[in-house]
Image (cartoon, rainbow, N blue to C red):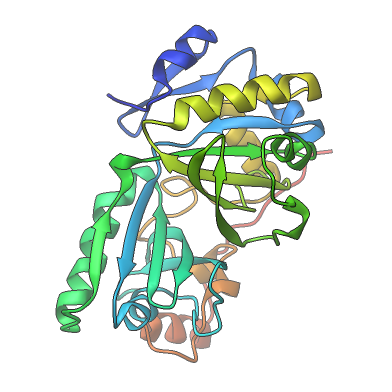
Length: 291
């Protein structure tokens, strides 16, 4: 199994490690319920270094992403993040991703770990088809570390280590800054239903940031949180997980992703989704709340 830069730290914290898509990751530390409640009531810190990051820049980057993404990125501001899905010609979901606009013609696509190479090849294939020779595509996953700090106390904890006023960072927006003298990309986003932040940094420096955040947040009740709590939190918030709720036999109209599909533009799979919308869907994923 592949290991994140924080593997030894997880073992030192007594984490139970599991195989998650070929990665050795913590499923829990002291217990899923305790970690779930910490995120809901105070804060939790997650190791998300296994996620994929793909940089796309150069003239034609926007056109390429408009072609492979269901979301219309025309009004995306620099620093803004857009949730989107990529679909195959039949409208099936290849992956759900977040698209960061980092400059006039510079983007970063964050993928699920198990679909990273599939996503990379899909984007490269459509770059070739469109003959966008000036577009540069680079997989930066192996050099990028990623942490998520989530929960109602996340801003308070992170603010102790940052000079910038975090209240000025809007939801689903990102900024480049420094944390403990390390260059980071910081976004107000996450995967738990809580307010929180995602931190991207050099993978060799991510351990230093993990240690500092845990030490700073411990007084406020922050706990390290594993995949178990991440899953229960996302289920409670109605968020999708690729490979469980989504795959290439499921369309975005059949789950909760119809709102990120713009059928007024052409993209791979748009014809199939237009037809499905006209004829009506035959199945729909819904959630039940247990009381």
